[in-house]
Length: 274
Image (cartoon, rainbow, N blue to C red; front, side, top):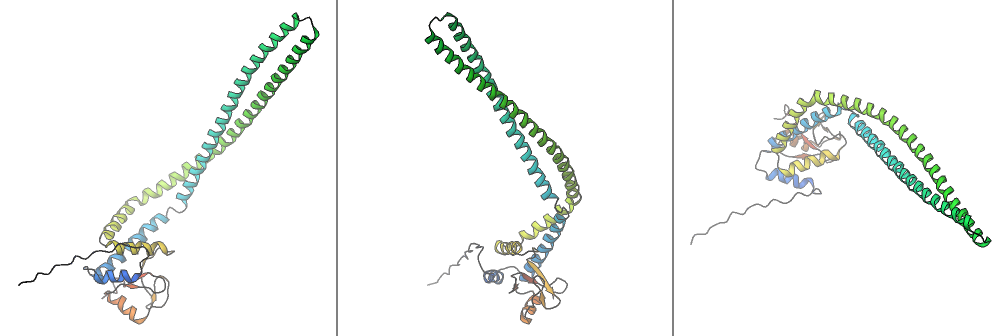
């Protein structure tokens, strides 16, 4: 009886950011694509990222300065809006207190008219007490109106100062934006080509390798995930000495070599690879 053999489908394990470089080296070993070719792609990808980063560095501190100025402008506009709301509230209070004064005046006038018709002293004293209380309430409203007008004047003066600052900020922001736009425009075409090259190279790598590359790049200060041999026997990233066997592996281009000191990928330069 003939036996049939089932082909087992290889299940890819999910990428774990904590995985060791051993698993990445195994991925390289198990990969159907040529290791030497993958290392060349990584080398070219690093060069493309370096070139993009140099273009970005041409902008210097301008993006951060523009962002800081925009934040300052927004803060000034928010401050002005808050002050205008406070002024509006004070104006509403003044209107309400003026209406209250009108009402109090009407009450005062009513009691004064009653006072002219009263003959006994007890009622006279009672109405006078009411008039005194109403007069006190009227003076309180007048005082509050005066304080509100002083507060409005103070807030308007603050708005004027903030507007003066805002005018200076707007001029600085416009100048910085124009300067940044000129730099971006001067490098836009070159950057577009480099980004396209970078994306094309990244698309040629498997997800695990690309993830490891990005992770290494993000973890080192100079963003160099892929380096060449320095001075014949050292890692081009951390400058620690590489063992002779690893040097042979790097030169052969047949294995993925990870620096045991800094974790960078070490490759042979294309012109030195055999």
